[in-house]
Length: 114
Image (cartoon, rainbow, N blue to C red; front, side, top):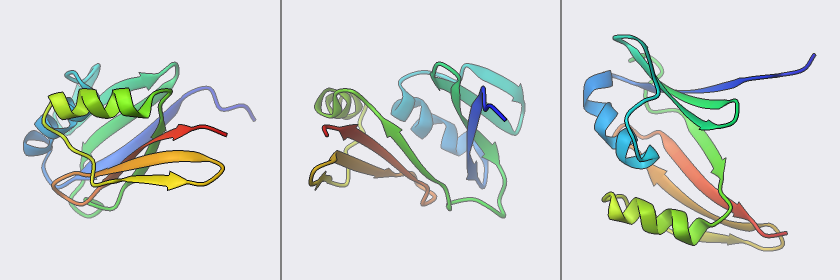
């Protein structure tokens, strides 16, 4: 079995108030709006993040996105009003910076240096 597309979901209680935070995080409006309860951003070739209204699952997502320049990416996020909770060095592997959305979903950006 070959996986050809990845959709990684992030649940929120209500889509409308969560949308601006994710637009700042991802730097643009969604690329896809299939219905009033779901939006999606293409973040890599065939890799997508979708935000979905799902109160029962809200606040439990863990996503890690690997970037090629963590410092540059963090600078762009800071320009959009988002600051990492800290940068952690992973000896022999790289570095990571975590963000938590208003509902508790954790989005991590990491840079692999090994």
